[in-house]
Image 1 (tube, rainbow, N blue to C red):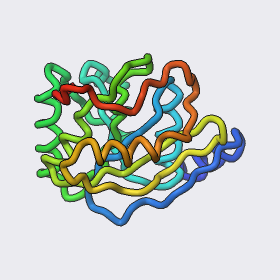
Image 2: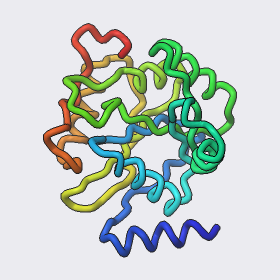
Image 3: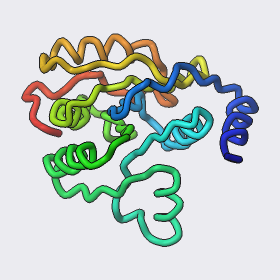
Image 4: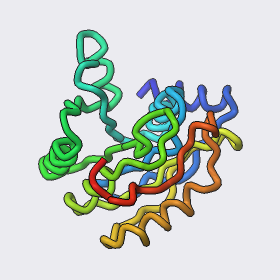
Length: 191
């Protein structure tokens, strides 16, 4: 594939290093964090192409007009009608049931603006679809991005979030002031 050498060249020319290995899994949720700029999506795509990872991500269904929709689909985007959060979780659980192989990247911060909590959808999807959570990161201070370990959620949300928080703690986003805490809302309702 011609894009793989181009992606590797982009990384080299811009001083970025890719780390980690694609996990030997058929299905997983990839946490994409921290997320404070639209550039994060660009680097996610460059990383995915350079590592030849068949990683999918969600995009607003309203973006799927011609020709943008075709391009987004080609890069791995899945259209999502964000009518309600519970609907999103069920749509993704259904997608995991239908697919033989699905790596889905989600940004739990949910926005590039500061928020006091992460959205809980990735965790709920992981539990309901019985798929592990893989830690993917971008660190602007070291110009490294990559794939870390996987977590099989045990259902103890506080314990699982402590593991996630510890992993993401050292990574610096593009705009540090926009990074919120790695926490779920106290009521833990779907966000």
